[in-house]
Length: 108
Image (spheres, rainbow, N blue to C red):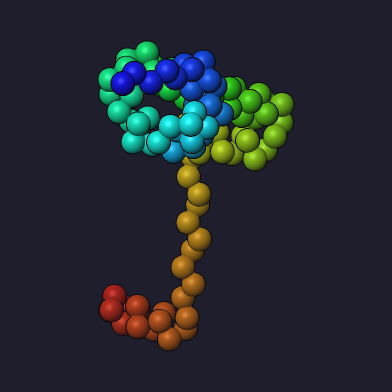
């Protein structure tokens, strides 16, 4: 039995970041059918992939624009994800009793 799936709708749903389960529900098919159709129908699989890429592109562009326009949170997020920035580790707090132990271990 051949199932007719609206490829444009599938692409739009994937672009909005819906999960496969959510896409299946919105299309009126089971999640199992969605995976089966993806495996058997290259056009359907491509529509899902294309939609996911479109959504990521749109959000990435919006994030980049926000960072360029001075949104500090967007700047930090972008630099952590793409620029290799990391959170500085907080210095360990040493209790006086721990300090004595540490110095004794170092023969100081």
